[in-house]
Length: 340
Ligand code: 13P
Picture 1 (cartoon, helix red, strand yellow):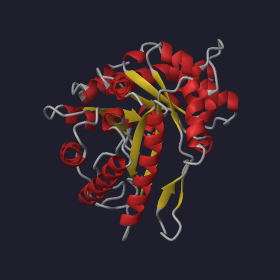
Picture 2 (spheres, rainbow, N blue to C red):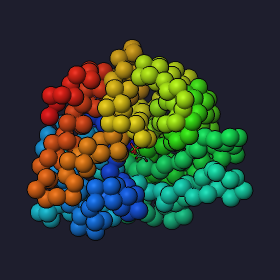
Picture 3 (cartoon, rainbow, N blue to C red):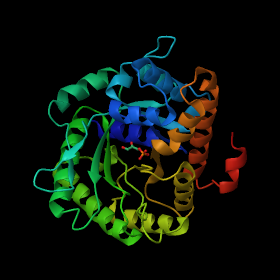
Picture 4 (cartoon, rainbow, N blue to C red):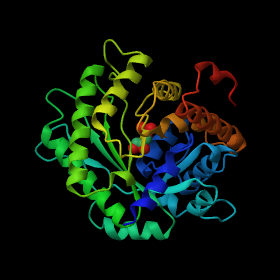
């Protein structure tokens, strides 16, 4: 393992106002997104949609990495250039989702454990050969009555750490993603408490597994009220609580933190990121690794129609640019009107 090189890749993914485009929806998930716009989830439609995102002119100035799915990393542009090569040539580092999904945790109703460790060493070797230089593994933590259990946090942290160690052995930067889910009616305070416990469990296991923190990117949720909370916290409070939690629970050796959007609207996710980056100097890069918050407007503009391919690209470009400004703490809501 070459930690220096891992650190350089991590910094390139989220440094200099750049962030990550999460385009690694599994086939069932992308089908759900396509159902929403009435498009058929055929292999060619999925390829064309990803091509639309990846070839949006100018977006490479704002996107340092793109997370692909197993099907996507094997696909090519219409001109026959394999996606990972196309992206890497433009400085958008190709990455790959390697977990195989969150399944019910036996004996713990309502809780999930992420699978995908079996055969991972060989898969990482193959993905590296295809051009992937980072990977992603998402752990899912639900909040509810009496959950999450300490056991669930530990089991998920253990899996994340085993994954991260295997990635670094393969010279691949692991994105470590413990996602505390926004569903439910819990308060922002409860989210902060659970996020803190999840991060503590993750860093304890990473250390036990001898993972080099300089060679990872952390992908956390923001500390935020649940979607159905009776009184939802405003943007300033979300930004403050999230920073307080991260400063207390994420070691300074971690080069970059890239948030997931988790169901926030595109504008909310951008505003929250910008507010945090305006709150003084931070030990790590604080950036984005959004899926829905980058793609939803593009998906809507495209609507599965070839004639709206360019409109979809424009929408993606706009979100990439605004989130880049947010990474620099320079985004204002007023920019929404004229950023295209
Ligand atoms: P969202 O930004 O849509 O939450 O997706 C990010 C991601 O990669 C989740 O694993």
